[in-house]
Image (cartoon, rainbow, N blue to C red; front, side, top):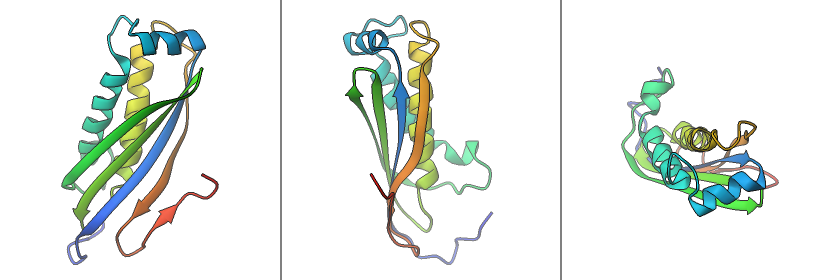
Length: 145
């Protein structure tokens, strides 16, 4: 594990995203609440938040961090695509990129789980870090977004 004990705590924010592509009929069921497991968007949102808090248990060598906030937005991009955006904030000596990426990924996986009875061919794609701020390395923003 990297020693971050001498690093100064700063406010750090990371934003990650994931895309979930499905049939238009599956999207309608999500929006209308017609899935057997219940409200897919709400469950995926909670799963993403919980996942951000569990990163040190899931990914070797990640530091446990005091998470100040996690925000998960699930936005319909078009009739077949949901965009998941995860924003994680902390004040710590190391960043929250892994927390944001994990939150977006687990929210997407949860959405798949909630919808698999309606469609098995759902595709999760484009999991990426969109931006990060704070810390010694400064700010980062994905180009072309």
